Amino acid sequence: MYMRKWRGQLPGFGFTLPSLLLTLVFGVYPILWAMRYMFYDYKGYGKERFVGLDNFVQLIGDHAYWDSVVNTFVYAGGKLIITLPLSLILAVILNRGLRGKHLLRAIYFMPTIVSTSVISIVFFIIFNSFNGLLNQFLLRYHIISKSIDWLGPEHAMMSTIIIAVWGAVGNYMLLFIAGLQNIPSDVYESASLDGANAVQKFGYITIPMLGPVLQMVIMLAIINSLKGYESIMVLTEGGPIGKTEVMFLYVYKLFFPLSTSGSAMEQQIGYGSAVGFTTALLVGVVTLLYFYASKRLNKVH
Image (cartoon, rainbow, N blue to C red; front, side, top):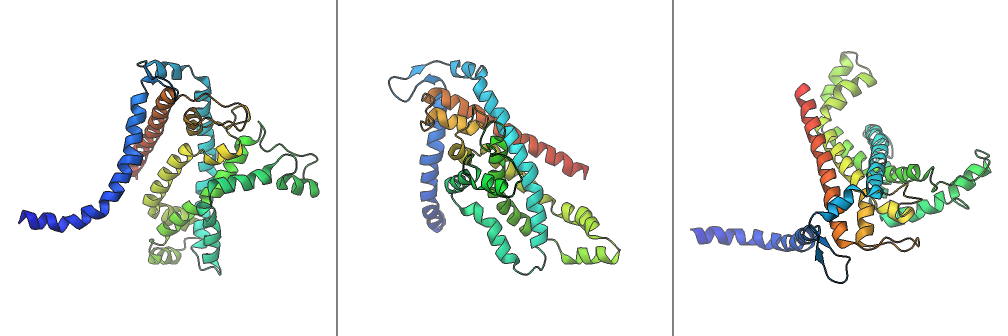
């Protein structure tokens, strides 16, 4: 009897085994490897030396890292404030019976499937201070009198947020559309019979009934915003003067120093592991706080 039961489950184990092995090799093992080196002084070459908690003591006084933490929350906050309302508005508009709505959905979703490196290179051409397309357009129509350094210290963070919004809005828009399509049309018809206008329907029907999807989208947006660094790495490498340095880019530089800017950091595997663990812990704490806040709101409602 037991042999028959196990034989019936063998195909399932066979299908899941490759994914499990890949997860163990490329997911679990690197994490365990990095956690070991948190307590070592190891620069990727030479001998490793056990230092205990010295890496974490160094982290406490690392002003560059804590500046990157601040930059991360500024970047994530700016991205969320713009992306979520814009995605929801687009979802509501494109959920109606508009002509060509499927084409518009595809257009808005397209940036999600394009390589981040390609997107960053395109926007570098647009935001270039000397002959960028944006400055050329603004100068031609006399909107500005001189070129703006979009990737300079004053505007670099805003430029990276714009790119992040452009790349993310289509993804969250589709998730909102999926949630909107699960709201019964009878509810809106009943509200119309009671004299409710479009704003009242949106506030008293759409938002409450979209609650579960909204919570999930906000959670994904928070995590992705805190983890995002790829476009910044290609566009500014965290510069100028650290104005766009974010947490995970800082960790990346400790493991894989960037040399294109001429000011590469020294490779520090041990210290990078400690910084990476702390960064993951910060993201986890923010996520748990969001879960707690969303549960409290559910109880209130």
